[in-house]
Image (cartoon, rainbow, N blue to C red):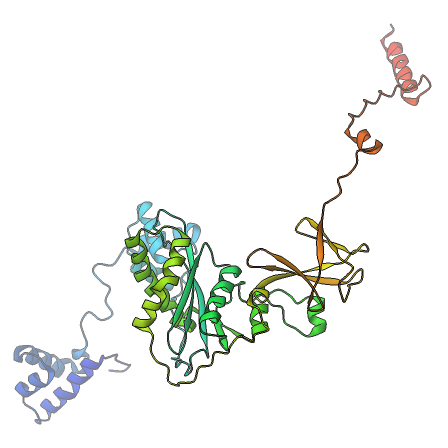
Length: 431
């Protein structure tokens, strides 16, 4: 018989065994054992093979429509309704909506119908390949930093944020609690880490605007060839800390797994102690909970050398962790900041000139310092002058007088037109 015959792997295996039975190499009982069939079934299959050839081995139901198939009219109605009203819906949601309208079609059946009609394409979830990164060898070489928003004090209370730092080599952790993941709490946690261990070499963070910024550089930054930095980024630059940003949570998996430990153990510890405030949570973290986690889960690094650097004696962290803004000096040596006016004193050396820019630094404790050419300025706060109520102010406060209505004169064109129209009307009404 001409043409091609489609056979499965099992059917081709039966053909090779039955060819050996036909040539006398195997007996039918041996063929049954080789194919895993009973003797009676093997006898029936071999008989069909001798009578029909290779086609006798092909399954009888191949190419035939299923007895449980849906009517073709139903398929056409469903596909037409999907095209008109449900285009873009997934097969699962579309099958639910169709059932609401009286059509009961399984989602996989609907998926096949839509794919054959070109209305749906198979969407496979492709996982991004990731390779395991070894721990850094030295303590302080790389420290991961991230915040964990969670209902730390129960579902009935608002979320709070646990800012967490984890060393990549040892797994040592240090954390603080705040109402949200802000620049201030990130500075305070890094400050506490430096006080305890020293200045780390690198920080591994995500791409939130607390750590990095995507704004365009200003003209001054372009002229200086500097990249735009956040307040936290400027503090790290002064300390010599390099910030590395992660593009996925899996990249900083050590701190992410540390979040899970806190959300399990710290959450239950807060519940046992009845702590429901940020102050109480921070007191618990500072008074031994972080040390307990480090004693249980931290491990010695591969190398003994510590890469933390000591803080120089001339460096004050209170002047490092600040928020900076620039202000321009007026002609009378004053400037405004947060709705207040400040006077620069004349005993400053060097003394800024009018139109010069100065830096206003707000420390974490709320105090303000003015800096010009890396030197602190002496200044005094002034009272804003209150505007005097003069004639113009009194005139504005008075209610405006009503303007008289304009009355046109007798020779105004409007009056002349009205006179002519009245004369025409009287002539047309005369008998």
